[in-house]
Length: 175
Image (cartoon, rainbow, N blue to C red):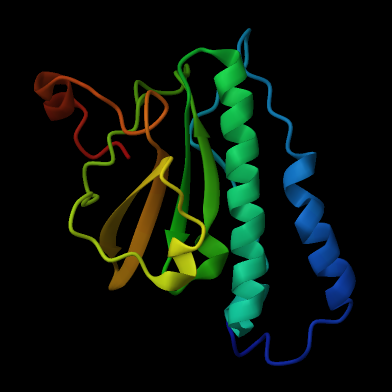
């Protein structure tokens, strides 16, 4: 990750960078089913931290992130099998924003994510994030290392996991 101090100068090739960023979601093609699986696999649209320098850059990265989110949700829905797709957004650390895909996998018995450390009611969604949230999404928030982090999940079967309380007790702290 890059600090804001390191990004104090103008982004060279910025127009090309943001043009490529706008097309980034169109290049994401995931394979569901068969022998494919995802163990909290994720992508960061702002891996290098360019959106830490200003609001316009942050919004451009969030637009790309939520476009990719909708695209992968459609791919997962076409699969019609068990899969979770969600987005995490950090209030201060934009390079940490990510799109996640999670399915049953041979690495661990960690499917589905339960999001137990997140609060789902009575939260205030900031305007910079709220403009990307539709009625099809649900937002949770948590505090981690003094920073507010949000998770955005679709409403319905691909969203928050509906599990029994016994299963939640044995899987505490997974996601």
